[in-house]
Length: 129
Image 1 (cartoon, rainbow, N blue to C red):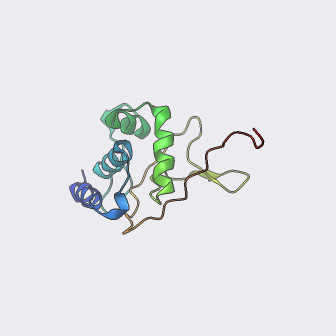
Image 2: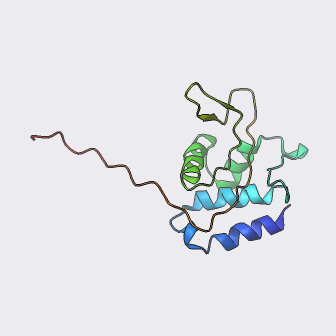
Image 3: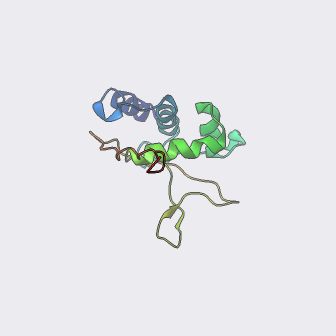
């Protein structure tokens, strides 16, 4: 267990960079930190788990595995990519999961500030109505 990484994450939650984070986003960072190697920041699996790291994160955060993708994307939008890419697709975008291969996670360096992308405009009614 990497108590110092958990402490780092918890202290970072008090910074302006962490404003507006959901509970799920916060918990994902804590769970990854709790299981990460202090030097490499790579999340570890334990033999006794009987689960993938994705299943461990989902269980501790209290969400379904499928819901984690949304949480991971929101973290990535903040510059906090916890997923380790395993390949790139034909458009050059990172691929984080493929059937038959367990995903890996890493605790990213926590930025002093973040610039969130602007919110997407919601589509309104068609013009002329």
